[in-house]
Length: 178
Image 1 (cartoon, helix red, strand yellow):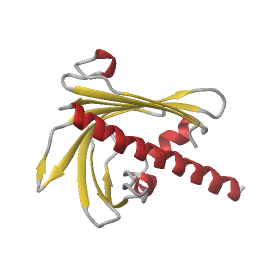
Image 2 (spheres, rainbow, N blue to C red):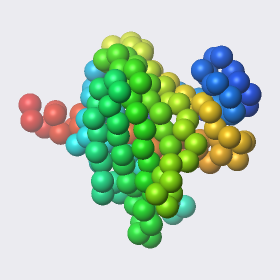
Image 3 (cartoon, rainbow, N blue to C red):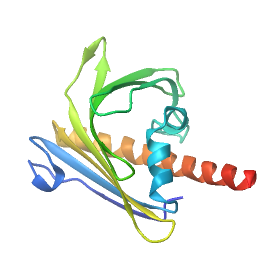
Image 4 (cartoon, one colour):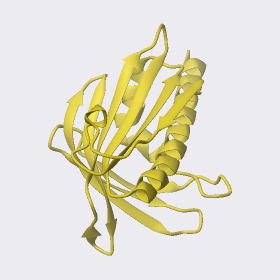
């Protein structure tokens, strides 16, 4: 699991965050896996469906009943996450840049009542941090308010926690296979 965390969020159009306008957030995490594995688990629909989504206020995981991904530059994704209470939340976006195994850039928007809300831009980088370790940096820019930034920070942090848990499961399963 991740052994180091850093979370920040500064408002404004910071070039460091790649924000065109609005608010941005950055989350970094050091993962105890090689970056090729981190990239694989982030980008493969079969893995995504196991960890994508936050946890509710009691710590129960959201599920992912729908996960459609066309993982290529210009390809789209659409995902439904379901709360433990049964509420569905749809999200969608387009992959803008993919550099395996180091960088993914994509748009992200909530879809509510058939309408797509404000697009934000997400950049996820995977940097080698020593043998078998990866520094993952997650940036989201273009958020419309501090409240939106802070809410997204909570959700993305929980999602990244679940991503780290999934990495642990994959490592354990592959070790058991020999």
